[in-house]
Length: 168
Image 1: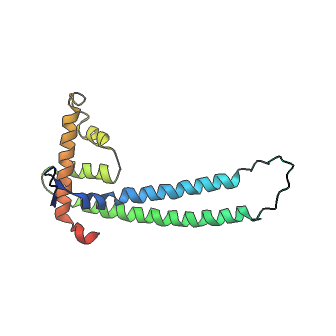
Image 2: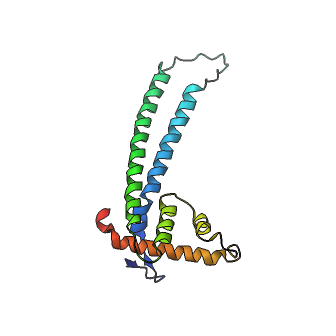
Image 3: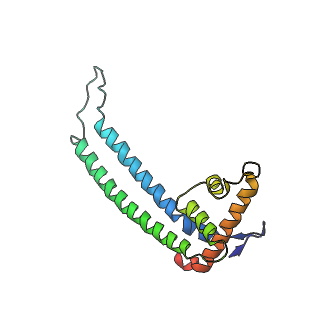
């Protein structure tokens, strides 16, 4: 673990990047799926005729639909590969998180899974842990700090479980 000289806090950037791989993979998958939908919409929507008395040249691509289907087919294959890659990353991260042992194991695992596998924002994670407390809304910042402390413990535990220098 490295020490940040300005803040004096330990940094877990390598561990966090390793954990964020699942988010990156799902983001990539969503981008591919969006492209597929856009191309399908463009392909299926009729083009509006342009009313003009100016002469037009013929289209350079007589088989626009066939070409679009080809691109969509390639993208669908890429999406399937990316989905499989995301599943593998999910399993790898979850397996590592499930190896965490010690004090507050359940809370630590829950925070790490909610953040890095379920991709929830911090507010939702804090509410999941402490939302049933009567004073939750009065002391929301206190509960957020507790959530961050549990997260830090999770990062420390994972640093002991996996050698992140060789994983990259």
